[in-house]
Image (cartoon, rainbow, N blue to C red):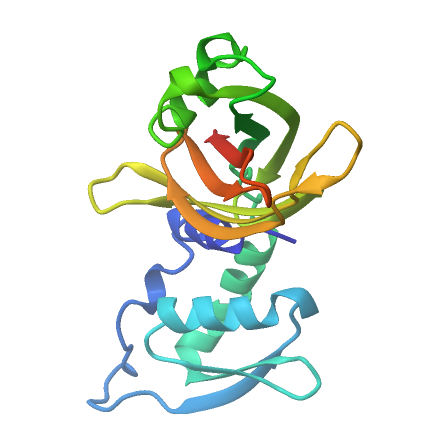
Length: 234
């Protein structure tokens, strides 16, 4: 089951948590209610998240997980009265649709021998990403040695034959979006099937739609430079 924060938001919109904003008092008495300890059956895969989220949402209560997996709640009686409905609403609220991120990865070799000028490489985003790091474009030629694509939900990890990635969509302080990437990419393949330049492992933050060079390595003989290029989009 996924999307617990979204479930909690929907539950609160429905008004289920209104009663927990203040400490209630027993009518006719100027003293707080007695607290009682109760146990609730909750799904095993939601125990920790449910406990943490309810701890933030319900001020006058203490939450813990029993060894048998039950959710233990120590709270005033009036709070306990409304908790079963709140827990039920949170667990059964529709899950929010995950944000999907598309990654495109290019493996490029550059050098003075065989290949094409940047303008003839056949990919405008790759050419623009390479231009600042490739030096004198007129003295180098480039060959697209491989390309991979994947789609993954924000916060998830995905793998293809020559790449592994974890992507997470976040908001900057100014409200704009950014994508945090953890990447592990295989070396740039050659025509004979071998890899050159070694693997690349890196963490970067880019804007949606941005294309960047995440790896640049010179071959052993110095004749070629190998580039790993990534684009992330929503």
